[in-house]
Length: 109
Ligand code: SF4
Image (cartoon, rainbow, N blue to C red):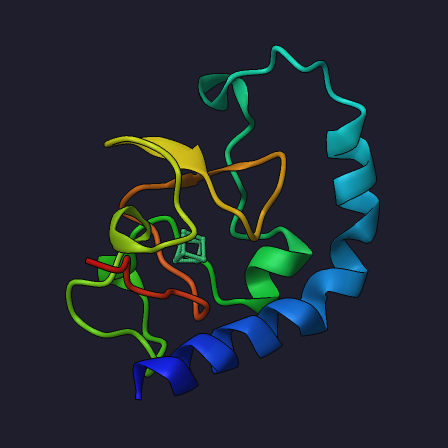
């Protein structure tokens, strides 16, 4: 079951990968000393964010795929602290620890 969810998440990621190639190129040109705290916050209006149903506050989503308690802070793609941090799906941007998107995948214990 968890494996199916992982595969589904990866499929969604691959579908949007083509659209994020340009963003990845921009990120690659950023100075190496850029810190997570310096990253601009991901806007809900960002096309990729919209495609994945990203919200800054998971408690406000109406997406039926959201499960209670799921937030960026407990997603395996999140690499930040208690407020904002990087997400592997949104290179060059910081997502909210309280946020959520349809690619949420629980951290492995
Ligand atoms: S739920 Fe996970 S994949 Fe989605 S924006 Fe948050 S950290 Fe990234």
